Image 1 (cartoon, helix red, strand yellow):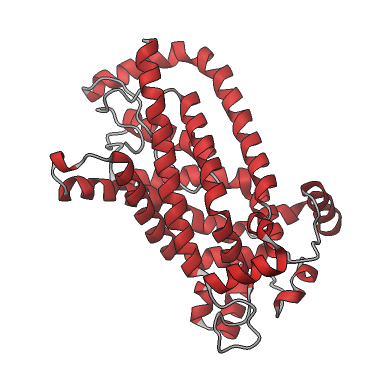
Image 2 (cartoon, rainbow, N blue to C red):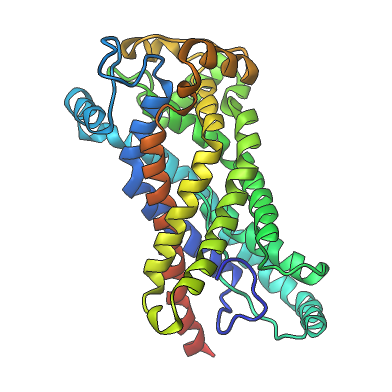
Length: 364
């Protein structure tokens, strides 16, 4: 179940287990969809039209781009920036998990009294449920914050924690908080994926030192404005659409027809990812264009290069030079990536959480 559900049965996994399931699901998912991410970024940064009719266009289709990247840069190119991003993300998740374990035992006594009182007011027993994931880049940070926010809404307000609007607001807030933590990783990943051969950045350390020396500390937050503008509706829509699609699935299929919950989670998560990505895609393109500002020397072999003074200037130049369709460059691999990444992260997350349930029952 998505978020805090006071009526859930047996969904009493701990915050520590939530963080572990989120970390592992994000790790596995990112490995699987990294090639599509690289192709999507290459499409987003290309000024020329994504068409065979444009002789200056380096890429014009997913399969053609895959073949060309493989031919020019080798198979490892599809995982450019993947390893450093994984290590940084997992390291952050590990610190969070350690913090959870240290604080959980000290806060349990006082919070248990408040939880019981809130449960009595709600007229139902106190139980934790499985919160839903969002994007695989933010999963281990956002799982816990979304869980806490939906539980807070249930206990502190009269709103139902399972409502569409509650999921939208809580999903957006949790994603916004998580974005601030991982944005430097996103900038590094974009630059690694954007560079061709020969490489400008050889290693993660080389990239961090070079970027800091040549562009200053704010380079790690380039593209933050469109990211924050997009992240709230994107994450909010994902949580809300995921919950709505699961309810729709229950309405369409009778109880006896719902045999495979993992498949349901995969399909509903994929649908939520596709809908959310389409609605917020132009802001993601602006973010990528701004993140490679000052990195023009690595882009000269790919075609035309542009410099932008900010979000509004970027949007204006894209519309003037590339037209309205330029706002959606790379949408096809992005939607495919969104469907697979969101679907798989929901699938793996709820699957890993389900592993904790029998362990919990056995311990009790």
